[in-house]
Image (cartoon, rainbow, N blue to C red; front, side, top):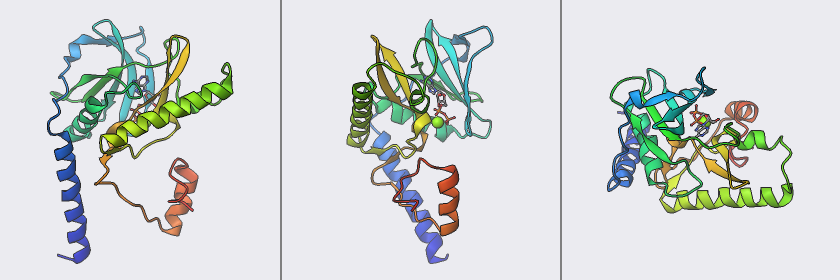
Length: 218
Ligand SMILES: Nc1ncnc2c1ncn2[C@@H]1O[C@H](COP(=O)(O)OP(=O)(O)O)[C@@H](O)[C@H]1O
Ligand SMILES: [Mg+2]
């Protein structure tokens, strides 16, 4: 086997090892019965149709939840990985995990619905809104984001997919709090990757993936 290929598979193996070690000792996420999920509104509100599937607002045993429905080709490990990481995030800056459905496809991930007056508001969309006392509110929101990330790192994880629509805003007692979502790309700190982009890829990333760190896309 070529040296390059051997290194690639060794790194993959190392990443899997460190992920399975970090999941050990963590109770596995609860299996949710699909029959207990009902549409929150008569037309079943879709929050977003993304690359990996559709997220929608539903009701689970009387509680409003966000349900991420993975595409047919979405693997079992994709769902269980995101659920296992979420289950370890005991911090208000991450959504509360209710559980997942991995018995039959489509696989589902169920978390508490976070929003403002029943609507999903992302960090990206909040930027365009007028809020009261913006200077101190935004300072606090940014501080809370940093605190949640600090917690994520203290659990030896890297989020790897931070961007404006992967942070949602929860209104609680008339104040706004950020909640970091979409933990499917989380890796352990030890399994983190350094990207080296070719000039052509840099052009592509500058255009389509503006959230990627500027030191990676120069
Ligand atoms: N717990 C939640 N509460 C409210 N809205 C959510 C929640 N989780 C996800 N969403 C909404 O669904 C969208 C897609 O969810 P996400 O987990 O980022 O999946 P994707 O992989 O499709 O990006 C988010 O950008 C947000 O608008
Ligand atoms: Mg997302």
